[in-house]
Image (cartoon, rainbow, N blue to C red; front, side, top):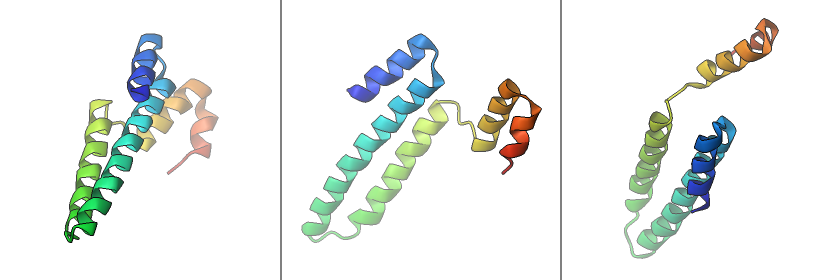
Length: 94
């Protein structure tokens, strides 16, 4: 619920930082749930659940990233550098 509030507020305010914070909170909640589920499945004798749930978490993170524009870190840094001037990009080379 907190993640939704942050994301919606970020969209209303056009704040990329607040949107990213909401997405991060959402992923954190999914990961926490997955850790509990993995522990339960492994305790029940299904150790295969650990890598499968790990792959599911990865898929969820990739989907959230894709839905939010799928910007790679270099593209994000370039966008920031344009706002701060050409010298900023030189400090953030990948």
